[in-house]
Length: 91
Image 1 (cartoon, one colour):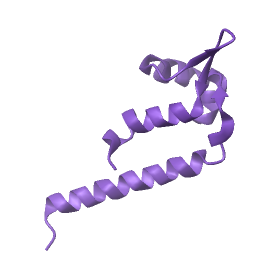
Image 2 (tube, helix red, strand yellow; image 1 turned 90 degrees about the vertical axis):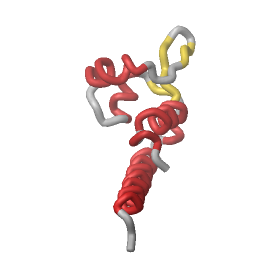
Image 3 (cartoon, one colour; image 1 turned 90 degrees about the horizontal axis):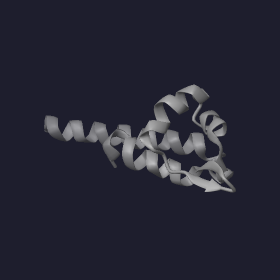
Image 4 (tube, one colour; image 1 turned 30 degrees about the vertical axis):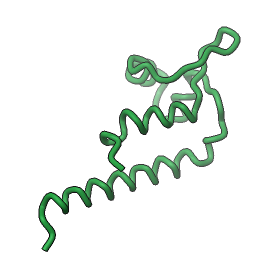
């Protein structure tokens, strides 16, 4: 007989895997984008530029400055999200 704690762990693991799969699925065609500006990142995340500015910017996402312009490296940004905000990084 399976204990409640084991069941909860199985459910949490399954949910984390489903979320990871969905993230991979949604970004697979965009992985090679490279470096995006703020408006492009908002589009990439399917949020408005205002939401990106108000909600994401205060979290200090990974950025680089290229020729005086702020850009967001997509691969680093995706990893930053996974490491910091994906259900407590349950694997």
